[in-house]
Image 1 (tube, helix red, strand yellow):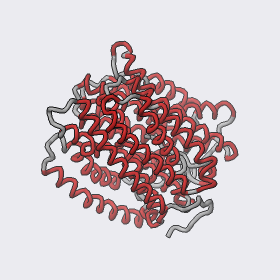
Image 2 (cartoon, helix red, strand yellow; image 1 turned 135 degrees about the vertical axis):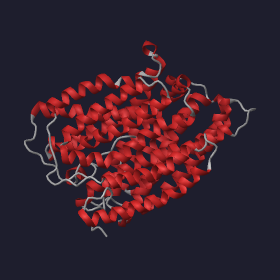
Image 3 (tube, one colour; image 1 turned 90 degrees about the vertical axis):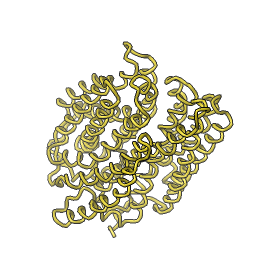
Image 4 (spheres, rainbow, N blue to C red; image 1 turned 60 degrees about the vertical axis):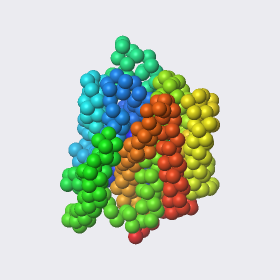
Length: 506
């Protein structure tokens, strides 16, 4: 997912509502129809961002056929968005605090709409990758403002209902994204093939800009943190030094420079940590509040989020390619096959927060990891048994298990991880936590070079293309299973029960 996930209403009322947000300056709160129209606008923006993140995977095979994109280019079409979104998320939240949430929201939506147009008009893989990176950067300006705008537009006694609506939009986007992508791709509207998956954002974005300019109320933080551009640059460089050679290395024959770059990346990230500590001492405005990692549950939760993001990024990419390139299904067939996964995920997410976690605590998340693992292992068995003859109904049990397991984790994880973070640092912790998930997703997409595409390259000329993709899918699912085992182990470090009171940052 490419959007931030709200904590339950109780946490939302106590904590700043978006990455690194200071307590918002409310000013004259909007009333009546105006605030509900503003809510519709920002929820539409969230829906657009989430759908755009999920809509692309289903169209990747068609993009490859139409543009001649290499597999590494396909990886960058998805990973470029996730990486740009992750890198800019905290900075986007701070820009809204400083210059105004409405201004940044409208600027982000305008940029997102422009980038969508560039994606739809792309003349080749390079232009499409560049436009996707721009899309992710603009989403990083737009998305952090959404929860802050909700926070200043609604009184505390109404926020529970509003955040529930926000969660419903996230669930709806997860269900609708692949289906919308399948319908638009297979429908081949006006002979544009895959391009309408991006161009559909134009009328939605233009309407959102017009309505947002009229109905969204401006707000700023009275005491916003400063921008940390040097920290952002160091973090971006360190991460690219890993992700670029990991993604491009296979296509380039794994050259020496790639291994040198990956080996040097920890040094750059160590320099980033040292700079952040100095920045914290100097003006108290580091990009990342490193003291949070001294809280065991937060550090473990960040590890869970990073690993789970990598598992998710890898799985969703290889699942789509398995269905279309391995099994020969069309986009609509693949999109409909994903419906059981989406419905199981949404149902389990709702049950976990409302009924299961209050009663069983951390065990619900651990059960989710084991259920998802059982789904991955079942998928491996089915891929080996049925090969290229697998049908949708045979895949459905594995999809139900994986969807239900994911739902049991993604909904309650934020509240569990942030439960021991002091309220004063909850905005910073939320920003780091969501950023970690996006970075994990980019890492998982990069790892597909080794876990998936490396296998398709090594199957030899005597293997049929479909069978090669089935073998690659099986191998990648073992990586997914290993990641889920790590997630299960890290979950033991989270608190058994969510605590509502502040804990000292030690």
